[in-house]
Length: 411
Image (cartoon, rainbow, N blue to C red; front, side, top):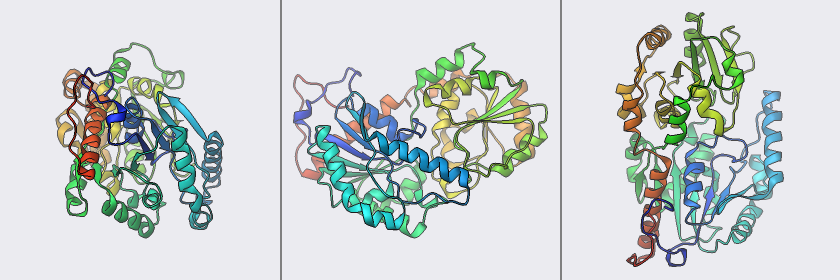
Protein backbone atom coordinates (compact mmCIF):
# COMPACT_ATOMS: atom_id res chain seq x y z
CA UNK A 1 0.00 0.00 0.00
CA UNK A 2 1.02 3.62 -0.37
CA UNK A 3 3.30 4.80 2.37
CA UNK A 4 4.69 1.43 3.49
CA UNK A 5 7.89 1.70 1.48
CA UNK A 6 7.12 -1.31 -0.71
CA UNK A 7 7.39 -1.37 -4.50
CA UNK A 8 4.16 -0.62 -6.35
CA UNK A 9 2.72 -1.11 -9.84
CA UNK A 10 1.28 1.86 -11.69
CA UNK A 11 -2.50 1.68 -11.84
CA UNK A 12 -2.31 1.42 -15.65
CA UNK A 13 -0.45 -1.88 -15.24
CA UNK A 14 -2.95 -3.34 -12.78
CA UNK A 15 -5.62 -5.85 -13.83
CA UNK A 16 -8.43 -3.54 -12.67
CA UNK A 17 -8.65 0.24 -12.42
CA UNK A 18 -10.84 0.69 -9.35
CA UNK A 19 -13.13 -0.91 -6.80
CA UNK A 20 -16.90 -0.69 -6.51
CA UNK A 21 -17.78 -1.67 -2.94
CA UNK A 22 -21.43 -2.47 -2.17
CA UNK A 23 -21.16 -1.72 1.53
CA UNK A 24 -22.95 -3.31 4.42
CA UNK A 25 -23.33 0.00 6.26
CA UNK A 26 -23.97 3.68 5.55
CA UNK A 27 -20.85 5.85 5.70
CA UNK A 28 -22.78 8.85 6.95
CA UNK A 29 -24.21 7.36 10.13
CA UNK A 30 -22.59 4.01 10.97
CA UNK A 31 -19.49 3.58 13.10
CA UNK A 32 -16.53 3.97 10.75
CA UNK A 33 -14.58 1.24 12.47
CA UNK A 34 -16.28 -1.37 10.24
CA UNK A 35 -14.11 -3.64 8.06
CA UNK A 36 -15.27 -2.34 4.69
CA UNK A 37 -14.89 1.31 5.74
CA UNK A 38 -11.38 0.75 7.09
CA UNK A 39 -9.93 -1.31 4.24
CA UNK A 40 -11.61 0.63 1.44
CA UNK A 41 -10.25 3.95 2.68
CA UNK A 42 -6.78 2.46 2.58
CA UNK A 43 -7.21 0.72 -0.78
CA UNK A 44 -8.20 4.15 -2.14
CA UNK A 45 -4.55 5.10 -1.79
CA UNK A 46 -3.87 2.81 -4.76
CA UNK A 47 -7.16 2.70 -6.67
CA UNK A 48 -10.24 4.90 -6.91
CA UNK A 49 -12.89 3.35 -4.67
CA UNK A 50 -16.62 3.91 -4.98
CA UNK A 51 -18.26 2.96 -1.70
CA UNK A 52 -22.00 2.40 -2.24
CA UNK A 53 -23.90 2.91 0.99
CA UNK A 54 -25.89 -0.09 2.19
CA UNK A 55 -28.82 -0.72 -0.11
CA UNK A 56 -32.17 -0.19 1.68
CA UNK A 57 -33.75 -3.57 1.05
CA UNK A 58 -36.27 -3.53 3.90
CA UNK A 59 -38.67 -0.95 5.25
CA UNK A 60 -37.91 -0.06 8.91
CA UNK A 61 -40.40 -1.59 11.33
CA UNK A 62 -43.09 0.84 12.52
CA UNK A 63 -43.57 -1.11 15.76
CA UNK A 64 -41.21 1.35 17.45
CA UNK A 65 -42.25 4.74 16.04
CA UNK A 66 -39.17 6.51 17.40
CA UNK A 67 -36.79 3.99 15.78
CA UNK A 68 -38.78 4.12 12.54
CA UNK A 69 -38.62 7.91 12.34
CA UNK A 70 -34.91 8.01 13.16
CA UNK A 71 -33.95 5.36 10.59
CA UNK A 72 -36.12 6.89 7.88
CA UNK A 73 -34.79 10.40 8.51
CA UNK A 74 -31.14 9.41 8.46
CA UNK A 75 -31.61 7.40 5.25
CA UNK A 76 -33.18 10.43 3.58
CA UNK A 77 -30.23 12.57 4.70
CA UNK A 78 -27.84 10.01 3.27
CA UNK A 79 -29.69 9.92 -0.07
CA UNK A 80 -29.64 13.72 -0.25
CA UNK A 81 -25.83 13.72 -0.26
CA UNK A 82 -25.63 11.80 -3.53
CA UNK A 83 -21.97 11.23 -4.41
CA UNK A 84 -19.18 12.76 -2.33
CA UNK A 85 -15.41 12.54 -2.65
CA UNK A 86 -14.50 12.06 1.00
CA UNK A 87 -10.71 11.76 0.81
CA UNK A 88 -7.98 10.74 -1.63
CA UNK A 89 -9.79 8.66 -4.25
CA UNK A 90 -12.42 7.39 -1.83
CA UNK A 91 -15.92 8.25 -3.03
CA UNK A 92 -19.17 7.61 -1.15
CA UNK A 93 -22.41 7.19 -3.11
CA UNK A 94 -26.00 6.91 -1.87
CA UNK A 95 -28.14 5.59 -4.75
CA UNK A 96 -31.85 6.35 -4.91
CA UNK A 97 -33.68 3.24 -3.71
CA UNK A 98 -37.13 2.50 -2.31
CA UNK A 99 -36.93 0.07 0.64
CA UNK A 100 -38.98 -3.09 0.93
CA UNK A 101 -39.74 -5.84 -1.62
CA UNK A 102 -42.22 -3.70 -3.59
CA UNK A 103 -39.84 -0.77 -3.63
CA UNK A 104 -37.04 -3.01 -4.87
CA UNK A 105 -39.11 -4.06 -7.86
CA UNK A 106 -39.88 -0.42 -8.67
CA UNK A 107 -36.37 0.97 -8.28
CA UNK A 108 -34.09 -2.06 -8.70
CA UNK A 109 -33.93 -1.61 -12.47
CA UNK A 110 -32.30 1.79 -11.96
CA UNK A 111 -29.76 0.74 -9.32
CA UNK A 112 -27.01 -0.63 -11.56
CA UNK A 113 -27.13 2.33 -14.00
CA UNK A 114 -26.79 4.74 -11.06
CA UNK A 115 -23.77 2.88 -9.75
CA UNK A 116 -22.13 2.64 -13.19
CA UNK A 117 -22.56 6.38 -13.73
CA UNK A 118 -21.07 7.12 -10.32
CA UNK A 119 -18.15 4.77 -11.01
CA UNK A 120 -17.47 6.57 -14.28
CA UNK A 121 -17.35 9.88 -12.39
CA UNK A 122 -14.73 8.34 -10.10
CA UNK A 123 -12.71 7.23 -13.14
CA UNK A 124 -13.52 3.53 -12.77
CA UNK A 125 -14.06 1.64 -16.04
CA UNK A 126 -12.83 -1.89 -15.27
CA UNK A 127 -13.78 -2.46 -11.61
CA UNK A 128 -13.28 -5.15 -9.09
CA UNK A 129 -16.78 -5.65 -7.67
CA UNK A 130 -16.71 -6.05 -3.88
CA UNK A 131 -20.01 -7.01 -2.25
CA UNK A 132 -20.75 -6.93 1.47
CA UNK A 133 -24.51 -6.24 1.53
CA UNK A 134 -26.29 -9.48 0.43
CA UNK A 135 -28.76 -7.50 -1.72
CA UNK A 136 -25.79 -6.63 -3.91
CA UNK A 137 -26.03 -10.12 -5.39
CA UNK A 138 -28.45 -8.73 -7.96
CA UNK A 139 -25.70 -6.48 -9.34
CA UNK A 140 -23.34 -9.26 -10.39
CA UNK A 141 -24.98 -9.65 -13.78
CA UNK A 142 -25.61 -5.91 -14.20
CA UNK A 143 -22.17 -4.39 -13.61
CA UNK A 144 -19.26 -5.57 -15.80
CA UNK A 145 -16.29 -6.44 -13.60
CA UNK A 146 -12.80 -7.92 -13.53
CA UNK A 147 -13.68 -10.15 -10.57
CA UNK A 148 -16.21 -10.47 -7.75
CA UNK A 149 -15.21 -10.47 -4.09
CA UNK A 150 -17.70 -11.29 -1.34
CA UNK A 151 -17.08 -9.86 2.12
CA UNK A 152 -18.39 -12.46 4.58
CA UNK A 153 -17.62 -10.71 7.86
CA UNK A 154 -21.21 -10.70 9.16
CA UNK A 155 -23.84 -13.44 9.27
CA UNK A 156 -26.59 -11.28 7.77
CA UNK A 157 -29.08 -14.15 7.70
CA UNK A 158 -28.98 -14.12 11.51
CA UNK A 159 -30.00 -10.46 11.71
CA UNK A 160 -33.38 -10.25 13.52
CA UNK A 161 -35.01 -7.97 10.94
CA UNK A 162 -33.83 -10.02 7.96
CA UNK A 163 -36.00 -12.44 6.02
CA UNK A 164 -33.83 -15.57 6.33
CA UNK A 165 -35.17 -17.07 3.10
CA UNK A 166 -34.52 -13.94 1.01
CA UNK A 167 -31.17 -13.11 2.57
CA UNK A 168 -30.12 -16.76 2.58
CA UNK A 169 -30.78 -17.02 -1.15
CA UNK A 170 -28.78 -13.83 -1.79
CA UNK A 171 -25.85 -15.15 0.24
CA UNK A 172 -25.93 -18.51 -1.55
CA UNK A 173 -25.83 -16.70 -4.90
CA UNK A 174 -22.91 -14.56 -3.78
CA UNK A 175 -20.93 -17.53 -2.52
CA UNK A 176 -21.48 -19.37 -5.79
CA UNK A 177 -20.56 -16.39 -7.99
CA UNK A 178 -17.70 -14.84 -6.01
CA UNK A 179 -14.16 -15.38 -7.25
CA UNK A 180 -12.96 -14.83 -3.68
CA UNK A 181 -14.71 -14.74 -0.30
CA UNK A 182 -13.07 -12.73 2.49
CA UNK A 183 -13.74 -14.01 6.02
CA UNK A 184 -12.84 -12.57 9.41
CA UNK A 185 -13.93 -15.65 11.39
CA UNK A 186 -11.97 -18.88 10.99
CA UNK A 187 -14.84 -21.14 12.10
CA UNK A 188 -17.26 -19.74 9.52
CA UNK A 189 -14.57 -19.92 6.86
CA UNK A 190 -14.04 -23.62 7.56
CA UNK A 191 -17.80 -24.22 7.67
CA UNK A 192 -18.26 -22.76 4.18
CA UNK A 193 -15.10 -24.04 2.53
CA UNK A 194 -16.97 -26.36 0.15
CA UNK A 195 -19.36 -23.58 -0.92
CA UNK A 196 -16.87 -21.16 -2.45
CA UNK A 197 -14.14 -21.05 -5.11
CA UNK A 198 -11.45 -19.31 -3.07
CA UNK A 199 -11.15 -18.10 0.52
CA UNK A 200 -8.95 -15.80 2.53
CA UNK A 201 -9.00 -15.07 6.25
CA UNK A 202 -8.39 -11.44 7.23
CA UNK A 203 -9.35 -10.74 10.81
CA UNK A 204 -10.30 -7.25 11.87
CA UNK A 205 -7.61 -4.68 12.47
CA UNK A 206 -7.14 -1.74 14.78
CA UNK A 207 -5.96 1.87 14.53
CA UNK A 208 -3.26 0.98 17.02
CA UNK A 209 -1.58 4.36 17.44
CA UNK A 210 -4.90 6.16 17.97
CA UNK A 211 -6.18 3.81 20.66
CA UNK A 212 -2.85 3.43 22.44
CA UNK A 213 -2.45 7.22 22.56
CA UNK A 214 -5.95 7.61 24.01
CA UNK A 215 -5.20 5.01 26.66
CA UNK A 216 -2.01 6.79 27.71
CA UNK A 217 -3.65 10.23 27.83
CA UNK A 218 -4.33 11.59 31.33
CA UNK A 219 -7.43 13.53 30.23
CA UNK A 220 -10.62 12.92 32.27
CA UNK A 221 -12.34 12.11 29.00
CA UNK A 222 -15.38 13.57 27.24
CA UNK A 223 -17.58 15.76 29.45
CA UNK A 224 -20.60 13.44 29.46
CA UNK A 225 -18.57 10.55 30.85
CA UNK A 226 -16.15 12.56 33.01
CA UNK A 227 -19.05 13.55 35.30
CA UNK A 228 -19.70 9.91 36.20
CA UNK A 229 -18.22 8.68 39.43
CA UNK A 230 -15.58 6.00 39.63
CA UNK A 231 -15.22 3.13 39.31
CA UNK A 232 -16.66 3.18 35.78
CA UNK A 233 -17.52 0.27 33.54
CA UNK A 234 -18.08 0.86 29.85
CA UNK A 235 -19.52 -0.88 26.83
CA UNK A 236 -18.83 0.79 23.48
CA UNK A 237 -20.80 -0.53 20.52
CA UNK A 238 -24.24 -1.26 19.15
CA UNK A 239 -26.79 -2.16 21.80
CA UNK A 240 -28.79 -4.60 19.73
CA UNK A 241 -30.70 -7.76 20.63
CA UNK A 242 -28.80 -9.96 18.17
CA UNK A 243 -25.45 -9.27 19.88
CA UNK A 244 -25.92 -7.59 23.27
CA UNK A 245 -27.53 -9.48 26.16
CA UNK A 246 -29.81 -7.14 28.15
CA UNK A 247 -30.49 -9.92 30.65
CA UNK A 248 -26.80 -10.48 31.41
CA UNK A 249 -26.02 -6.76 31.52
CA UNK A 250 -28.94 -5.73 33.75
CA UNK A 251 -28.39 -8.55 36.22
CA UNK A 252 -24.69 -7.67 36.40
CA UNK A 253 -25.23 -3.92 36.84
CA UNK A 254 -27.86 -4.52 39.54
CA UNK A 255 -25.25 -6.46 41.54
CA UNK A 256 -22.80 -3.53 41.39
CA UNK A 257 -24.87 -0.61 42.66
CA UNK A 258 -21.76 1.37 43.66
CA UNK A 259 -20.39 1.24 40.10
CA UNK A 260 -21.35 3.59 37.27
CA UNK A 261 -21.98 1.89 33.92
CA UNK A 262 -21.76 3.85 30.67
CA UNK A 263 -23.09 2.51 27.37
CA UNK A 264 -21.80 4.29 24.26
CA UNK A 265 -23.50 3.44 20.98
CA UNK A 266 -26.74 3.30 19.08
CA UNK A 267 -29.51 1.34 20.78
CA UNK A 268 -32.30 -0.58 19.05
CA UNK A 269 -33.78 -2.04 22.24
CA UNK A 270 -37.11 -0.71 23.61
CA UNK A 271 -36.75 2.74 25.20
CA UNK A 272 -37.55 1.45 28.68
CA UNK A 273 -35.25 -1.56 28.57
CA UNK A 274 -32.95 -0.14 31.28
CA UNK A 275 -34.08 1.95 34.26
CA UNK A 276 -31.19 1.24 36.64
CA UNK A 277 -29.92 4.46 38.30
CA UNK A 278 -26.26 3.46 37.90
CA UNK A 279 -26.51 3.04 34.12
CA UNK A 280 -26.09 5.94 31.69
CA UNK A 281 -26.82 5.59 27.98
CA UNK A 282 -24.65 8.10 26.13
CA UNK A 283 -25.83 7.32 22.59
CA UNK A 284 -23.97 7.06 19.32
CA UNK A 285 -20.63 8.91 19.06
CA UNK A 286 -18.39 9.71 16.08
CA UNK A 287 -15.71 7.10 15.45
CA UNK A 288 -13.01 9.75 15.80
CA UNK A 289 -13.69 10.12 19.55
CA UNK A 290 -14.59 6.54 20.45
CA UNK A 291 -11.07 5.86 21.78
CA UNK A 292 -11.41 8.68 24.33
CA UNK A 293 -14.61 7.10 25.68
CA UNK A 294 -12.91 3.72 26.06
CA UNK A 295 -9.97 5.34 27.81
CA UNK A 296 -12.29 7.05 30.31
CA UNK A 297 -13.40 3.67 31.71
CA UNK A 298 -11.83 1.59 34.46
CA UNK A 299 -13.11 -1.68 33.01
CA UNK A 300 -14.48 -2.44 29.54
CA UNK A 301 -17.07 -5.15 28.99
CA UNK A 302 -18.63 -7.28 26.24
CA UNK A 303 -21.87 -8.81 27.57
CA UNK A 304 -22.66 -10.87 24.47
CA UNK A 305 -25.56 -13.23 23.97
CA UNK A 306 -25.32 -16.67 22.37
CA UNK A 307 -26.59 -15.76 18.89
CA UNK A 308 -25.33 -17.19 15.61
CA UNK A 309 -24.16 -13.66 14.80
CA UNK A 310 -21.78 -13.62 17.77
CA UNK A 311 -20.54 -17.13 17.02
CA UNK A 312 -19.52 -15.96 13.54
CA UNK A 313 -18.17 -12.54 14.47
CA UNK A 314 -14.72 -11.12 15.04
CA UNK A 315 -15.51 -8.02 17.14
CA UNK A 316 -13.48 -4.98 16.20
CA UNK A 317 -13.93 -3.58 19.68
CA UNK A 318 -11.88 -6.43 21.21
CA UNK A 319 -8.67 -5.14 19.63
CA UNK A 320 -9.65 -1.54 20.30
CA UNK A 321 -10.26 -2.35 23.98
CA UNK A 322 -6.89 -4.14 24.19
CA UNK A 323 -5.07 -1.25 22.50
CA UNK A 324 -6.59 1.34 24.85
CA UNK A 325 -5.27 -0.72 27.74
CA UNK A 326 -8.09 -1.27 30.21
CA UNK A 327 -9.07 -4.55 31.88
CA UNK A 328 -11.71 -6.45 29.89
CA UNK A 329 -14.54 -8.69 31.07
CA UNK A 330 -16.45 -10.56 28.38
CA UNK A 331 -18.69 -13.49 27.78
CA UNK A 332 -16.72 -16.13 25.92
CA UNK A 333 -17.02 -16.37 22.13
CA UNK A 334 -15.09 -18.29 19.44
CA UNK A 335 -13.04 -15.40 18.02
CA UNK A 336 -11.52 -14.80 21.45
CA UNK A 337 -9.12 -17.73 21.01
CA UNK A 338 -5.91 -15.80 20.41
CA UNK A 339 -6.63 -13.28 23.17
CA UNK A 340 -8.35 -15.30 25.89
CA UNK A 341 -5.34 -15.07 28.21
CA UNK A 342 -5.57 -11.26 28.11
CA UNK A 343 -9.18 -10.94 29.30
CA UNK A 344 -11.53 -12.20 31.99
CA UNK A 345 -14.44 -14.36 30.86
CA UNK A 346 -17.72 -14.99 32.66
CA UNK A 347 -20.92 -16.74 31.60
CA UNK A 348 -23.50 -15.54 34.15
CA UNK A 349 -24.27 -12.31 36.04
CA UNK A 350 -22.77 -13.45 39.32
CA UNK A 351 -19.44 -14.37 37.74
CA UNK A 352 -19.51 -11.31 35.47
CA UNK A 353 -19.92 -9.00 38.46
CA UNK A 354 -17.20 -10.86 40.37
CA UNK A 355 -14.81 -10.54 37.42
CA UNK A 356 -15.42 -6.79 37.27
CA UNK A 357 -14.72 -6.47 41.00
CA UNK A 358 -11.53 -8.46 40.56
CA UNK A 359 -10.44 -6.21 37.68
CA UNK A 360 -10.87 -3.11 39.86
CA UNK A 361 -8.52 -4.46 42.51
CA UNK A 362 -5.85 -6.10 40.35
CA UNK A 363 -3.03 -4.09 38.74
CA UNK A 364 -3.27 -4.23 34.95
CA UNK A 365 -0.36 -4.06 32.49
CA UNK A 366 -1.51 -3.14 28.96
CA UNK A 367 1.89 -3.80 27.34
CA UNK A 368 1.47 -7.54 26.52
CA UNK A 369 -1.80 -6.86 24.67
CA UNK A 370 -0.35 -3.94 22.75
CA UNK A 371 2.67 -5.99 21.73
CA UNK A 372 0.41 -8.75 20.44
CA UNK A 373 -1.50 -6.21 18.34
CA UNK A 374 1.62 -4.86 16.63
CA UNK A 375 0.89 -6.77 13.41
CA UNK A 376 -2.89 -6.33 13.60
CA UNK A 377 -3.20 -2.79 12.25
CA UNK A 378 -5.70 -1.84 9.55
CA UNK A 379 -2.75 -0.71 7.41
CA UNK A 380 -1.27 -4.22 7.55
CA UNK A 381 -4.65 -5.84 6.81
CA UNK A 382 -5.28 -3.60 3.80
CA UNK A 383 -1.75 -4.10 2.46
CA UNK A 384 -2.15 -7.88 2.53
CA UNK A 385 -5.62 -7.61 1.00
CA UNK A 386 -4.36 -5.40 -1.85
CA UNK A 387 -1.82 -8.03 -2.79
CA UNK A 388 -4.50 -10.75 -2.67
CA UNK A 389 -6.80 -8.75 -4.95
CA UNK A 390 -4.16 -8.16 -7.63
CA UNK A 391 -3.15 -11.83 -7.60
CA UNK A 392 -6.81 -12.85 -7.74
CA UNK A 393 -7.67 -10.87 -10.86
CA UNK A 394 -4.60 -12.08 -12.74
CA UNK A 395 -5.57 -15.64 -11.82
CA UNK A 396 -9.20 -15.14 -12.86
CA UNK A 397 -8.06 -13.73 -16.20
CA UNK A 398 -5.57 -16.52 -16.68
CA UNK A 399 -2.74 -14.02 -17.01
CA UNK A 400 0.73 -14.04 -15.49
CA UNK A 401 1.37 -11.27 -13.02
CA UNK A 402 4.13 -9.06 -14.44
CA UNK A 403 7.29 -8.49 -12.49
CA UNK A 404 7.78 -5.00 -11.17
CA UNK A 405 10.89 -3.09 -12.27
CA UNK A 406 11.51 0.36 -10.95
CA UNK A 407 7.99 0.72 -9.65
CA UNK A 408 6.39 0.03 -6.35
CA UNK A 409 4.20 -3.06 -6.10
CA UNK A 410 0.85 -3.24 -4.38
CA UNK A 411 1.54 -4.96 -1.07
